[in-house]
Image 1 (cartoon, rainbow, N blue to C red):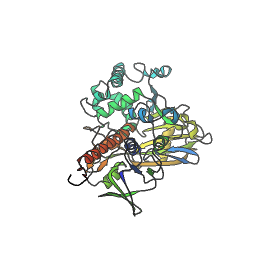
Image 2: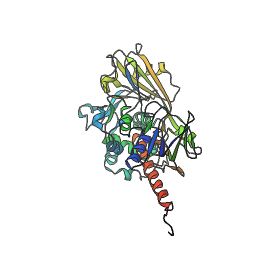
Image 3: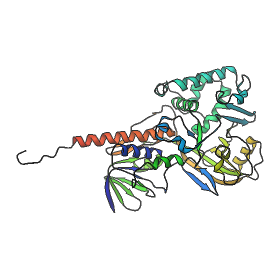
Image 4: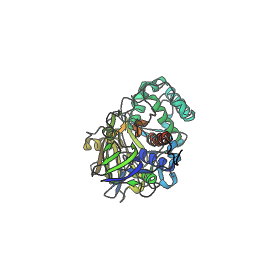
Amino acid sequence: MSLDATEVVVVGAGLAGLACALDLTAAGRDVLLVEAAEEVGGRMRTDVVRGFRLDRGFQVFNTSYPQVKRRLDLRALRLHPFTAGFLTAGARGSHRVVDPTRHPGRSRDLLPGRLMPLRDLAALGLLGACDAVLPAGVLKRLPETSTARALRAAGVSRRTLDTLLAPFLAGIFLEEGLETSSRMFHLVWRSLVRGSLCLPRDGIGAVPRQLADRLPEGRLLLGAPVDRVTADGVALADGSVLRAGAVVVATGMARAARLLPGLPVPAGRAVTTFYHAAPAAPLREPTLVVDADRHLLNTVVLSEVVPGCSPDGRALVSTSVLGTDADEEAARTRAGVLYGADTSRWRLLADYRIADALPAGPAPLALSRTTRFAPGRYVCGDHRATASVQGALASGARAAREVSADLDRARLARPAVRGGAGR
C-alpha cells in the first residue's frame, strides 16, 4: 500500500530526528516523522519497572548546551541536580572532588597535597578557566591530539591522570585509554564547568517527549519500523510505502548504515547499567561515585538525585560497567565496596546492555559533518557530530538546513510553466 506523498520523511524520533522535523516544520515543509518504537526518544527513554523509573542506561542532562537552551523549557522539566563533582573510591580510600566555587565547604580534599599536588591543581584550574571563557569555535580549532596527551601537555601528572581523571572521564567517553579527541574533551570540560548535570523529575525520557509535543498533529507515526529506503521514499516493515521527495535517516548509527548502504559510521562504545533496589541509601547525597581502581565506571544513588524515581522509600542505585558482558553479582559486590555497604539485600530491577551507547571519537575527529549522503538522502545523529545531546540536536538542525536548501535549489531549477498561445 502506498500512502500519500509528503515532502520530507524523517526516520527515527530520537533527539536528532525530532530537531530535524521541528526545524523543517518551522520552515514550512511538509514533514512526516516515523519511529519504529511505540514512543519517542531513541536512546533517551525511561521505563517504569515495579514502580521505579529507570532510564535506559545511566543518563545525565547538561544544562549548558546551546541547543538545549534554545529548544527546551528547562523549568518544565523540573530538573534535579547532581553534586557538582564526584567521589572517588578505591584502594587509596575515598576522596571528594568538587567544584570549590559551588561547594566551598566540601572542597578540603582539594587542598594541595591531599589528593593531588599543587602543580596539578593549578594546571586543572587554568584548563577549566580557559575552556569556560574561550568561545566554542576557538576550542574546536585547537591543535588536536588524544585526551590523555592533552592533559599531560597541560601539566597534569601521570599519577593524577591515572588515578583520578581517567576513571572519571571513562564514564563520559566510555573508554579507558582516553583516546577520545582532545577537541571533544575541551568541549565536554567546558560544558561541565559552565553547566549543571541534572535529571528531569520524570526521567530522561521527558526531554524528547517535550520536543515531540511541539510537532503538528498527525506528523508523528509511532510503531512504524522502516524496512528500507527506496528510490521514491521509504518502505515500512508492514509493506506500506511512504513516498517523499527527501528522506532523512536519524536512527542509531548501526541502523543508519543498514538503511543507507555504504554509509561510514564510527565504532560504538558499549556499556552495561544495572539498577538495584536497596533497603536504604548507601550514600545520602546526589553524588556520582567513581571507581578509582576501574572495576566499575561509576555508581550513584538515583533516589537521592530524584526522590520520586522510587515508589516506596527504597533506594534506587545505578551502577555502570564498560562492555556488554558485565556480571551483575560482581558489579553489585564492587559497588558495596565503594559505598562501604552490605549489598546482600539489594534486588536487581533491570539491566541495560547497550552495544552502541556512544560513537567512538578518537583523533582526528570531525566535530560536524554534512548530512548529505546522496541526492535526496540525508543522515543525522550524534555520530555525525559530537557524542552528546548537543551533537544530536545540532546534527538534526544541520540536516533541516541542508534539506531545505536543496529543496529550494531544486524548485528554482525547474523550468517555469508558460501558458497562453503564442507565448
